[in-house]
Length: 225
Image 1 (cartoon, rainbow, N blue to C red):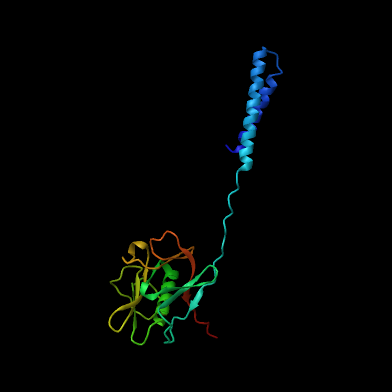
Image 2: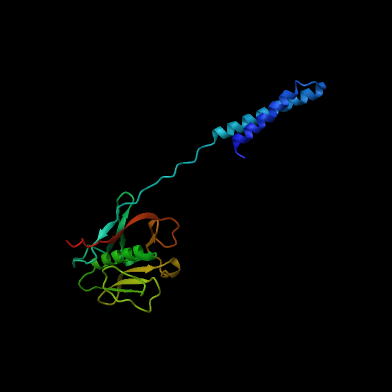
């Protein structure tokens, strides 16, 4: 029962008790009725005071998604400065970059998760130098836009892997797509979680708090005229 209902119920009982004092009867009974009316009135005042002083819940802030960041899936051969891998923008428009040696984990299912993986992979390829090679493999059920690579039957469902390999065989960067956290690699790394509600960037897949991210996405070819 809410505070207003309790307050009105107590006031009603107090009114009945007060009216009883005017009825004929022994003096002790009228005195008891008057005391009960006073006590019930005080209780109603306390209930009203607590209800009036109760703070209203804080309003929920609603933020609309930002425009996606579009990248070219066909690098022009120019390597970016350093090993910074651009993965998108946070709320406010600030760009977000990750050290490519840390690797990037993309968690999600469907076309959007595959598109984020493809765009980050293209960005990884854009950081490559002449003596580095980008190798990409994916499961049979993963469709990667514009990335020319054959599916690998041995990869699990929903999994794709891109590795930037140096001339000496070293891993100079990587991007991994998994359908859920149960399939993630053992080594923790920056994680982009893709859901139907948007994308979240975490410094570690086990990090409880992340930041909303407008991820890089593949650019679409203009319609033929």
